[in-house]
Length: 275
Image (cartoon, rainbow, N blue to C red):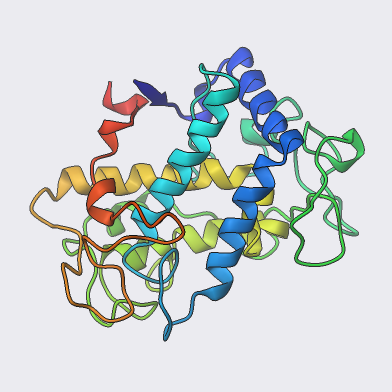
């Protein structure tokens, strides 16, 4: 069973293996396929179209499948690797260990946001940005520039306490757990973290920054926590909803998986806190 761990607890060897597997996917061209998939789905999402990956109930099962596919690609390179998660409610500033040169590298330089250290720095020659939102080919970050503070534990708890998964109109104006976790209403969890990291994380091509996977692994963990706390609160909507992925509708781009298929993460992995 794959065990997803808090990145703050990873050993030096676990960090190295994760980084090396990510770099190998990049070298092989596989990594950029994941970036392209995410970029195409976030850019096509609107509150009037066929919503799948964002601003809709399927935000959480869509990303659960997306992360699982990426984790399986990593494991095809190194079977010992699992996706770590970044608990940004605890590791809340640029001094946190994930920004160290032996892992993700740190903040971008002031004049252009370019990350200058770590394995994903452009100068190292192994991390060119190929799925671009502009002409720049280097990884960019602006930690804390777009928004000053990452979400607090109290803010996380306020969202986990919400009883209903989602509700009409099933978009970015909806009330309920999913939309508050995604960040279009209320205390703004998921979206705020993207903006706090800044640079490419503030764009549809956010998986260009490997921190994307750790951020979303924590979002996935929060969903799992919510599911455990509210066992009688199902995925909604159940059926017959226009322009929204219902419980047993297939999700693009795979067309072979439904939200119902993704409700039980323990079929694929568990979290260190569940041990």
